Structures are given as C-alpha cells and as structure tokens.
Length: 197
Image (cartoon, rainbow, N blue to C red):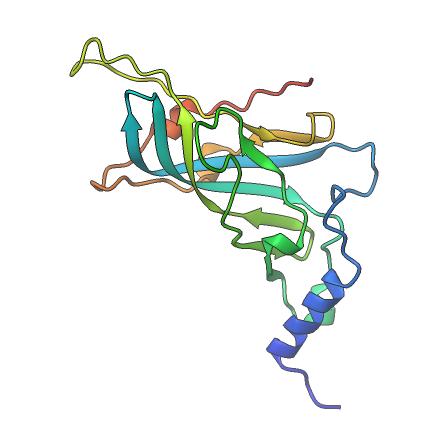
C-alpha cells in the first residue's frame, strides 16, 4: 500500500470532520453545559472620529477561542496532523455583534479561516471595521480626552448558553496605529461583564 501524502491526509481529515457536521447548534456534548468563548480585541487603527454624529470608526482584529467537541481527531490516524485550517463559515462560530453599533454591519463580515486543533480548540481571528456610538465632548479641546466603549455580545444566546470571557492580555495580539505607536486603549478599556437576561 502506497504511503499517503500530507495533502491527501489533510483532505481526508477535512472530509471526516465536516461530513456530518451541523454548524447550527452549539458545539457541546451536553445541552445543559455553558460554552465559554474567550474574546480579545486588538485596535489596529482609529479610522475616523465624527464629532458631529458622535461615531467612532475603528479597525479591529478580534480573537475568539472556544472548544468544539465535534472537531476532534487522533493525529496518529492522519499522519501526525495536529491543526487544520477550516473556513469559518463551515463551522459553528459565536454570533458576536457590536451592541452599540452606529452604522453599517454590527457583526463580522469577513469570514477568515479558523485554526482548529486536534483536541477541539478553535482559534478564530477575523478583522472587522466597526462604527460605534461614542459620546464626544470637545468643550475643552485640545485638552479634552474621550472615553468610547464598544459593547460586544452574543446576539442569540444569553450567558447561560454562551459565556464570553476576556482573554488574558498577554494572549491578545498587540495593535499598532498608523504612526507606529502601540495602541493601549483596547487593553485598558475592554470589559466583558458577565450578565444574564
């Protein structure tokens, strides 16, 4: 029997994982379990601050991590493959939206690949451009400072089903603005309060 190539093994793994995969229900073994999604965000740049309409436009790289019990495999059966890139529109992903959206799409519109590990860990890092409401007071310009919040949450699920937790800061990509300066605003201001409706 001829030895199978890496490409063949990867293709077989992809088919085996997604053959009966249903991306609609949460990827947990027990329906009473809470699915934890770890969330981080890196501010890549502030695109615009519209003082008149009180809209902040930002380019963010989101980072989400969770476990998908349906996406596991034994690496020894697939030539030692331990990770696989899967298009995110083919697997369950959190329906994360920006609650204080001001204009445009409040959800993620660019569906990049997710990186899936053999033990079911999923890492998804979609880029996004958001327009959020931000109360802007320029009374003391140029000595003013502004505080803008971006409120993210799962649209369809309460915290009893999908629990959003903040990624530890050392695990989130760091952002650099267009002037090459480190951007610290998201690191300081990110608050993922745990609440139920």
